[in-house]
Length: 237
Image 1: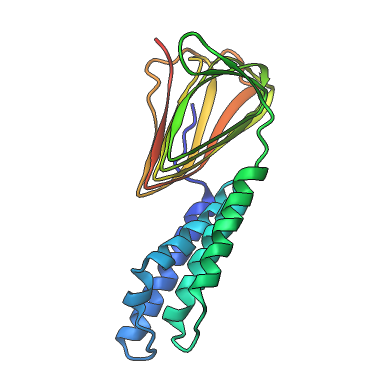
Image 2: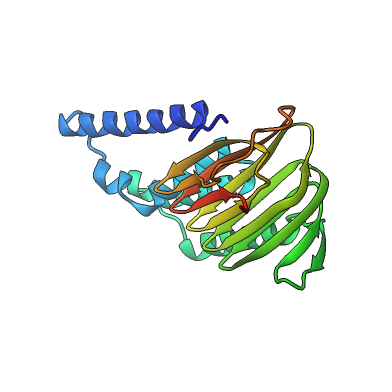
């Protein structure tokens, strides 16, 4: 079983950001520039901007990544250029409206059946799960499961895929965990590859003694980012 913690693109991006920050810090230390670098890089707007860029590159949640990068950028500019002023009373309502529109128009087309054992049964080949300040337990049924998206923001979820049959080829579950988490329960004989980028977070494999993979033509790839959050994959024994 091949497991990777981060993709080459993510490593290149993080390395480039650190090099740029270190270079600017060095130039200021040598009195070659004057930008008050610590005041910029150790600020919440800068962290928000970097997180947004990482999500844009390494996740399917492009709109959310763009929104975080935009919020970080507009609140960071006055720190870099003190002469720039903007009316926060106008900016923040626009941001709240954008978040609301994203939530309303995000497609959720699966069919849901309630289970007597708690949680919800979902009949869908492609999963869309969003947990914001909350969460729940979902059991997915599919004869041709093709992956999906899991988003957890200050929330969490448990996704049970043991009633699914994996589609042929590579199937991707894209996770975006921001101060949140998820647990994915899988059949023991699935071939799984992890490709989640952790930023003050993590994503672990807790399937003990998995069976020998019976069909190498079907693979589940779990990719995305875990920022101040985390997740795990496990199997029933």
